Image 1: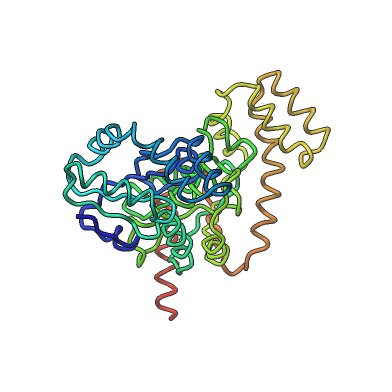
Image 2: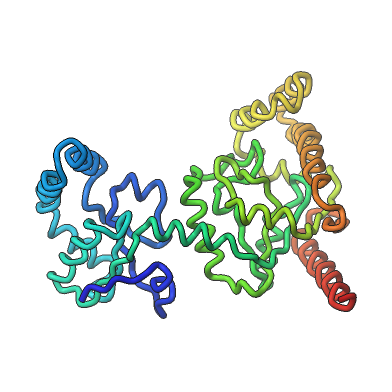
Length: 350
């Protein structure tokens, strides 16, 4: 049996459904539903050819060409689908829930799949669902602090301690600075970043607080969905303050092992902001392997830039927490204590 379901219903299935995306590899790479498996009806070149015939000749000719491309792959479609779902229930989608997904679903049904679902509206409906999702209000706790404060490590500890945390930099494969791509995988597309971010939020209790790191709108080449970013900017920021010297040592431990070529490239990325003299000095220090002084130079720029961003916030929403060193476990505990005290005070005040 083939059943059409909405994207909302797909996400309310009690045990989840294996999901097959039958779009072309290029469409899938640009953006896909997290957890989906790509079993494309057409290669990128075949899809382009079918589209050209549709526009220049007719729909009938395009369908005829499509069948010529698909027919030799029919056994492969079944074999790959069984890897995804055995013969149990499975969901299928294409771009708009049209001909591609329905044809694939019918083929599955004819070859032993008893329960096949087609997502109405396809991937386009999912994208609308994602963008609408971030319009709702969230209970956010924002962790701020100057570069090198170990915010990512603190968030990981908070998560281990049972707090709800979304690490946007991990999803973005970027640490948010000119040095942020060093040691990271290639960044996802903006579209896929939004999709994966949605998936992270989907597994949380949205009635409870969620910890996020204070970020710019851009994290490398990806962007935080604007409705979520605006909420981040309007929330209380728990701003940790750790001595610059401690942070410089931490940055040396983070980046020195990646080699001088990558560090020199990152320095050149902020050359205009550092100023010519500082850039020359930084490169000279790199040649001497004096990573600590390079880190201190970089922090001159980053601290000023971050301070400007904090100054643009409502000062009544910035709570500063003085911390002595880079003991992430201790710092996480100090932040929890501070936040609990602050929120209890707010409750009593109300």
